[in-house]
Image (cartoon, rainbow, N blue to C red; front, side):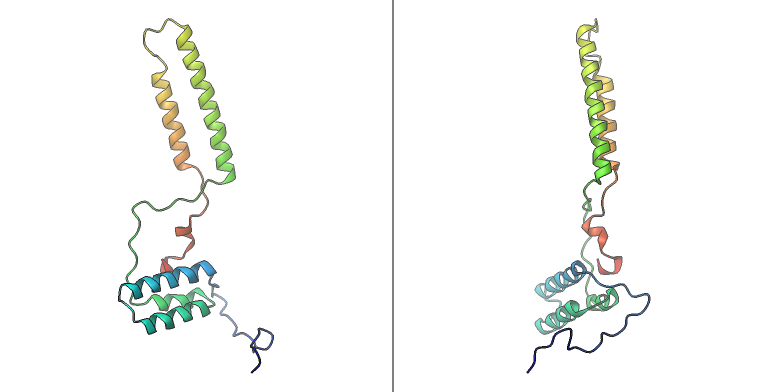
Length: 154
């Protein structure tokens, strides 16, 4: 029997105009949830195999959603993963950190040479450090893997 190749297969069924093609990571996410459900005893081995085969054969997201029917959603992480900083945000944060270090060095140098009875730069150092910390937490980030999946597949 001849091997089936894309060239010998019939034409693919046309997609609806609003259909979104499924990505490999979305298929992998669905099959991972199906494997977990089978391991927990929620699916029989045959049903798990059938749904996983359908997940790998799915072309659109709409074909993946029914495969998760009847399965509980995984618990939401307390602290969702955050994506890495964008290159622009990383550069801006480095500049901010450099300016903060220079200002702190000037404050320490001024306190060491001046007649201050206590370590006077502790207040400004605290606020500069806090501002830098807030900047790092609120900086623009790339999309995290958790945010890439559509809500109905999470």
